[in-house]
Structure formats: structure tokens, C-alpha cells
Length: 433
Image 1: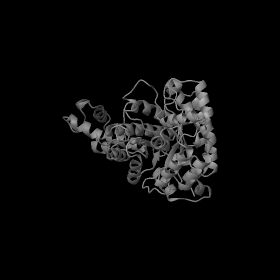
Image 2: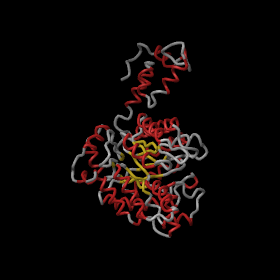
Image 3: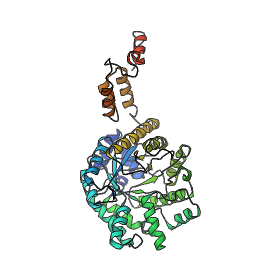
Image 4: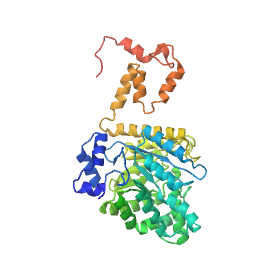
């Protein structure tokens, strides 16, 4: 039985207990959220996890880090190092998006080495290996797609991105409503190629029941992918995007009825003034399902800095109700991320998630901020470094500046405002709580 099945009959799993403890909430709250489909716990029955996580309403905003090989860079050891660093910095999940080299071996080693849930986009392996096997993407039989889905589930993958909303109808809407960037989702584009070349329906939509059978057997959480997410802010919240979202909402109802956990993926490139609307649309059309946003990026003019554009959008989206942020690195749109890019991406997403949790008023969300503020007042550098999201960079900055006085920094020196204020009010009032 899946986490959803068990929650519905009032059963508590060890994963629910672990999530409740990590969130500082009651297990009953977690169980009820899972039963209603408003919380998911990605955990394949065959994958040992020391750090399961809950994603959804009333919980801390979670962060995902994408790793994986490409045709031009297929060093498995390098990707494993990225995974370890991402998790050390606080990534709640990782996704293996490998498209080159030894795809299966990469995934198996990531699954074996990860302490957090692992997700994949199965259409990548389907298309890459299917092209080798059958000569072209269009010649792949639908049966092969489900074979790969089954094999990944059997290996222990915790959540799948399935682009079941890229249908013939939705592609027809896209044809009649062209965009600046028609399809920027790699999975969405691959499925569109197969659908249009064969004049056939998307197998993941046409035989969604089979997708559910596989997911239910292994308790794989479905992340229903936004294959038509906007890749330019000029395309945001258009007819193709909304049409796909409506389809995902319908599929979500079917999955929940069958006991399969579901979250919904969202945009993409979205201007600031449309982000809240996008969150509200998803929550309304998908019955409050956990919302997994890819950014969103709030402008298109910052290549090399898209970890910043996505952090801005992620903070706004999560404060409006999004539950799960996919990190974006500085190298987005430009290259496979380096180890340093991964670090920058995770920290930027963690900042956005934490800022949103404060805005949401989540229990204890302010505690860390209050404690680091107290350490700043005391010029307690060691405690500040300990409480920082990135514990290394602040220490490096501090050590590299070599201040003349130990209790100040080189920005203000003897004119430190905190020290001046401390002297001004010394003995004039009670200490703050």
C-alpha cells in the first residue's frame, strides 16, 4: 500500500513520523495532509532513505537540486560530488537529469548514495536509449516507454516527472497560439516530437492507468510535469500553459482516487505580477496539490545570474503558497552546472524558501533569524557562521578582511553602529527578550 492508501485508513508510517518530527508538527497533521493529497512523501518502497521529507501545505518550503550527466560531460564521480554538496547545503531532494554517458549506472549510483529522495524524468532515458535502439524517437513503440518507467521504479526512484499533459489537444492549442519560445521543456519537446510524428496521443496520457499501476506498485510519487511551461516571461500564463494545467488537474484526480501520490509542476519564466495568480490557478485547478515550481524566473535578461532571478520568483511563489522550489544555477541556459554553480543554486533557493516560510508564518520560521541577530549584536562571529545557510563563505569573508579590532568588521571599524548604539543605551533600558 502507498503512503496515501495507509493515511486514508488512519495508519501511521515511519516516514510520516520522521516528517512530523522534522517539521515540528503532529503526526496526525501529516497523516491527514497525505490522506487529502495536500502533502506528499516521496519514498519508493525499495529505496532506503535516512532523510525522508514531506512536501505540501503547512510544511517548510522544500528545495530540489538537479544533477546529472550530459553528452558533453559524463563524469559520474563529479555528479556524485555535486549531489553530496547539494544535500550538505540543505537540498531536500535531488533529481538525476542525466542525458549522456552511462545513464543507468549514473542513476543507480545516485540512488545508492543519496540520503534524500531522488527524482528522474524517465522520458530522457526513453528518448536517448530509444533512439539508439530503434533508430529515431518517432519509431519508439509506446511499450518501450512503459518498460523504462517500470525499470526505473524497480530501481528505487522516489518521484517521476511525467509530462502526461502534453496531449494532441494541448499541442493543437499551442499551434494556434504561437509563442516566442514554443516548448522549452526537454521532456515536453521530446514527447511533442513523438506525438506529432506518429499522429498519436501521448502514451502517458492515453494509458495513464498504466502509469498509475507502476507508480502504485512501488509508491512512486508522480510529479506531473509542465511540458508547456513558459520559457519567456512574454509567454507566461498563456492558453497552452493553462490548458495543460487543466489537464494535469484532471489527471491528478484520477491518480489520487487510485492511491497514487501527486504533485504538480509549474512555471517557468513568469513576471513578478503574475506569480501569485499562477499559484492560485494551480491550487484551484488541482485541488490544493503540492506545487513544484521551476524558479520561477522573473526576467529573461540575466544569463549568468539566473540563480538570483529564480530566487526572487521562488520567494514570491512560495510565500503565495507554492510548496517546492527547483533550484536554478548561475549557468542555467548556458552549460551543465559546475560544483560551484550547484552551491550557488542551492543557497539561492534555500534563501528564497526560508524567506517565504517567514512570510507564511510557519512555526519556528523566525527562530534562526532571531538567534543570528542576537549573535550579530554580540559580535559573536562563530555563532553567526554556525547559523548561516552557507557556513563557509561568511567565515572566508571575515578571515580575508583582517579587521584591526576583533569585535567589528572592516566595513565600519570603530564606527560600528551596533557598538555605538550599545554604548548610547547602556544602563538606560532592560535587555530585549
